[in-house]
Image (tube, rainbow, N blue to C red; front, side):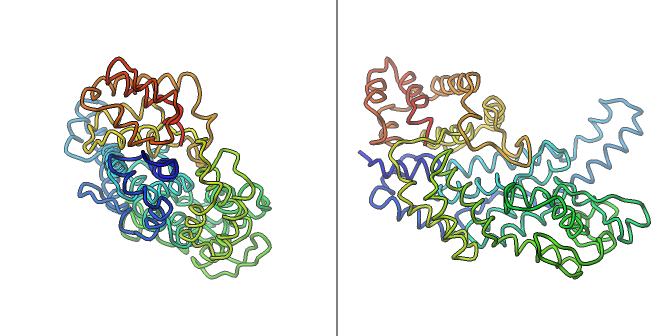
Length: 456
């Protein structure tokens, strides 16, 4: 029987054990996790059907133009519009491909700890398709800005995330114009503070990080100029560039530091300073401890992670390794309630599923209430049990578990799956119920809805 330590490694740090995975981790659970930190290529999502952000935005611009032209020519005939657009890739098709590729990677990866880190940081730097402008590039954002940098320096991740077209569009910086800039004076354009505020509140120092509204406004002025090339922009369509005409001139002060007028480099210097502030270290440490240890993480864990962050100049690989070594992260009682997506992914991994049915995948995400790239706000998906423990939400998990068990139950021995996914972490009550089930279908449902499986 696989040890509790092994099951913590594969479930709390990983995404749920696949058949045979626990045996790989059993000899040295911590070493198995640490080895994944340095395997940068293991988080690279390969799929020939996925486009980069630039190509996706160009396709979106073409779709928008064609739709406007078809609407005008058809004089409101919706069927004629649909026929005119039938040969073009829609934004929703782009994001559907991203969701499918992301899910397939999650159920098959041999580096599940690293993939959990990808998802943690993608949620930290949320961009959401709740805004239509983000739909074409939400998946590209995670692949381009997040995946390659989850164990590098935090500054590199922060800079890549904030200057990606998805973030600039999602938080309106692409439209922000300095009031005293060339373009601002000419067209009476306005300053948008969304990106500056969320960088401070959600991405770096946190809401208690000591900044004021004056800091937000000054930072927003510094960020002006960073934009995305549209269909009629002077740069290549879909690319990010610094437009001096939009940039608010002058020296600006953020959190007590004066930043001289050096064009686009001005914002980079602010990001670099924010990335290594003690307030940022504590904010990041708290979020990591909450995600991997408990909804209310112990101060000792937060302090240790914050110290690792500051001592390494924000090196996330060092912080992740410290997390693996924390005794608080290896408490035997599972306390973190799985989000709907975590529940789905761990189930499919436990069943050894290798190929996903896209229609069923979309239906499941919609039913369980956590479709990728659709977080309700820039704060991302909640990371505490209260958000996912409502009666209706639990009922939907049960309904999905029953439907899935009915489809695959005869092909899966529940006793084998119990040993592979929970091992020694399975309690006596769960073992007795699964072993005494009237059918394989019932036994599988009992595993999936067991408290030990619902938590990690």
